[in-house]
Every structure is written in structure tokens, then in C-alpha cells.
Image (cartoon, rainbow, N blue to C red):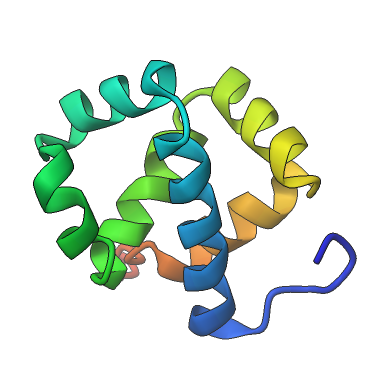
Length: 98
């Protein structure tokens, strides 16, 4: 997984699910994520099927360099792979024609 480039939204979603599994593996990571997302443990599984939610998972990790580095290390991937998945899944702002 480490060396292959991401191939579109499906690969990005798979990586986001791996990141989510890493988050939920420990309460020290899960509780801040639940607080930030407003979800409960019961609604987390249902939400995990939504691409927008998966983008939010990556957004959460990308928002804290320490969390990003810890996650990348645990998944044995480069942080740039998480960033690439985040860019694929995150809505892009409209181009400014001004």
C-alpha cells in the first residue's frame, strides 16, 4: 500500500476507512473525534458509509500534524498518501473567476 499511488475515490475511501479504524481503536483518539463530529458510537458505523463523512475523517486527521504523523506511522504509509486521499474526497471550492 505504501508505494502505490491512489487510484481515485474508491482507493481514497478505503484509506479513509483504514484511518477511521485507527481512530476508533483507542478511546484517546475516538473520544476527541466523536466530540468534533457530534456523532455517538452508535451512529458512527452508519456514518462510515457516507463519502462526505470519510472526507471528514481525513479532515480531522489532517487538522493536527501530530495525529497525522501518528496515523501514517501506524498504517505504515507516508502522510502524503493521507493528504492525497483527503484532496480526492474533499469538495473543491469553486474557481474564482474574479
